[in-house]
Length: 295
Image (cartoon, rainbow, N blue to C red; front, side):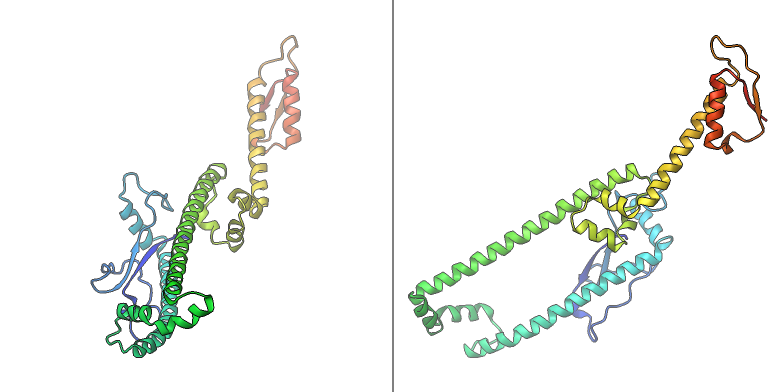
C-alpha cells in the first residue's frame, strides 16, 4: 500500500450532502493548489523509496512516480486517494456536528452577557468579571472570588500545557516507531529478498502484530514460515547439487593419490537430475579414484 499525503483545501466549500467527491484518476488534469479553486493536493511518496517495477537509471523521481500511477498502479493509486478523501470527509462531518453543538452554548452565553457579533474576547472578559458567577464555587472552596478565579485559571493553563506535552510526546513516539520499522524493513529485505513491506501491511494480522510490539522479523517469519522453510530447503538442495557436481567433475578424471586407476563408471543421466543418494554414491566413487563421466 502506498501512503500518500493529502491536503484538504477548505472542506467547508463542498456544499450539499456530506459525501466525498470521486477520487482523481491518473491522467486527469492536476488539482489546483489549495486556496485557488479548492480540492485535493496529492503529494508523491518519499522519492528515496525504490519504485515498484524499477526506475530507469537517472529518471526524474517525479516522472517515475507519474509513470507508475498512470500505468501499473493506476487503479491502486485512485483507490488509495479515494479512501483518504472519504476518511477526511468523515472526520470533517464529525467536527461540524461538534461545532454546531458548541455554537448553541456560545449563543446562550453571548445573549446572557448582551454581546453582539459573536465577540469571544468580549465574552471571556465578561465571564472573568462576573463576580456572581464565581461567588458560589469560591465560598464552597473557602476562597475569595479573586483567589478562586486565579486558581481556576491556573488549573486550566496547566491542563493546556499538559495536553501540549502529551501531543508532542505522541508525535515523537510515532516518528521513532516509523524510523525503527524502516530499519527493520531494510534488514528484512537484505535477509529475505522477496520481502515487501507495503504488501505485508495489507495483512491485518501483520499490522496487529506490529502494533502489539512484535519485532517485524518475527511477525514476517510467523506469517510466512512454510514459505521460508521451502525456500531454505530449495536453496540448500541447489547448493548441495552444485557442490557434488563440481566435485565429480573436478575429480572424475584424476585417481586418488596412491591408488590405481579405477574401472570408472558412465552415467547416462543429467547431473542436474541426480537424487541425493546418487550424488553421494558418485562422490564416494570419485574419492576412490574412479573416473566418473556422463553421456
